[in-house]
Image 1 (tube, rainbow over the protein chains, first blue to last red):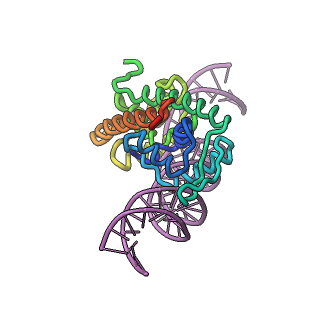
Image 2 (image 1 turned 90 degrees about the horizontal axis):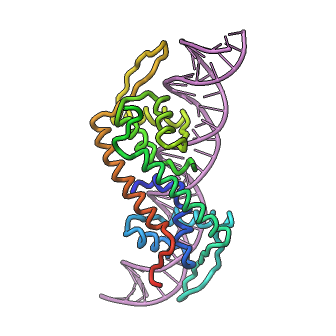
Image 3 (image 1 turned 90 degrees about the vertical axis):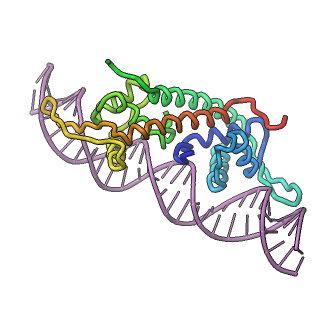
Length: 111
Length: 111
DNA sequence: GTCTATATGTAGACTGCCTATAGGTAGACA
DNA sequence: TGTCTACCTATAGGCAGTCTACATATAGAC
């Protein structure tokens, strides 16, 4: 998977995996991998800054938890984040439709 | 349309509009607009450098033509470009499937 | 002589994903 | 005791492609 292709879709992916349940960063990476059948291998250097950015904006909220002696920062969707996720979903639908439409083979303008 | 979303898909779009017939830069921009129902407004500062890059790589070839007193650089797909377009199409199909899959609402891993 | 549409092109900013690196805990195993 | 692996968070700097803004030029309408 071309890394550049993810540009501008990362936020949607992160919000989406957090929709069902709060998760910490490491678990988010694993969830993305699992949901994509292994296709999505997002590095920590992408995820952690992105999560902080989304929290700064107000789409996510986080809190520290200690589980088995390990510290975790668990993220959850805020109301604003849930709303944003809806927007991201329809934006994706439109984007996929537009790009898919242009890419569809055999189109001619006037003959 | 979020500009960042186009990252990594521009090449596919350009190759695709050139599949049917050779076009010059300005006409490519109009073709993208037409095919997308007006959704795709790609600025010249994006298209011209991208076309040159694709020519440098070997996916496109160009030649100057004068039509109605105006100079045009007309681009056409090379064989390598046609092959690349196939690759871009299947890459897009996989990408759309993966992102769409992760974004689909109501997924839970284990309950 | 001015405006608009047509047409190509570059410089530099911006942005966000990546690589590489850093730090640390827990548990298995020798 | 030491080492290895899995787990877990985080930052600095690189990189590449898209964008904004600008420069240049012809044709035709008015």
